[in-house]
Amino acid sequence: MLFVARRHTEESQLEPKRARMNFHPTLSFSEEDKIGTIQPHDDALLITLRIEDYDVKRVMVEGGSGAEVMYHDLNKGLGLKPEDLMPYNSPLVSFDGKLVIPKGMIRLPIQTGPEIVEVNFIVVDTYSPYTTIVGRPWLHTLGAVASSLHQKLKFPS
Image (cartoon, rainbow, N blue to C red; front, side):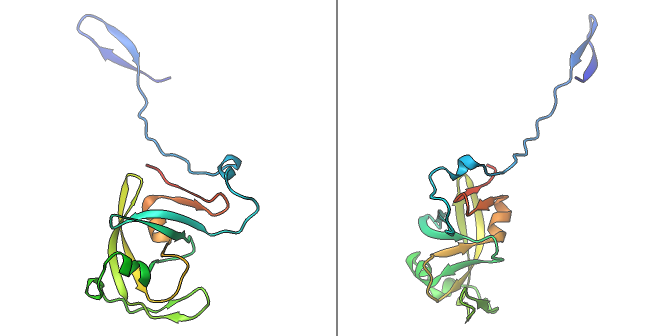
């Protein structure tokens, strides 16, 4: 224990110095985190996110993706118009290996718990069973860790 001497007007005494508490949580997963999942499985991690004040289901968390992708159906569902999109000219490669030309890019807020993060979504007009894909940029901004095995996403808040 650390002690610091303090001078008082009447007498001097030793008092313990209080440690500063810098909280840096360790994000990890345990066997208990698998409770409620059917094991073994190879399911993608799907979550619901609050995007632009809407609860959006079937959002795939893909730690291998270097971009956030929004599919055209969700873009329409949010009431966004083509003029809301910023130009985006780099083609993407879909899961089946085909080249996809984006319609553009849009910056929208995502609320995850108490955190709100502005995200650049690349909008594509192609079929997907998902509404959007969030990848490393979003995960890293939140300091989040995803586990498809545990079907959970953890982040400090």
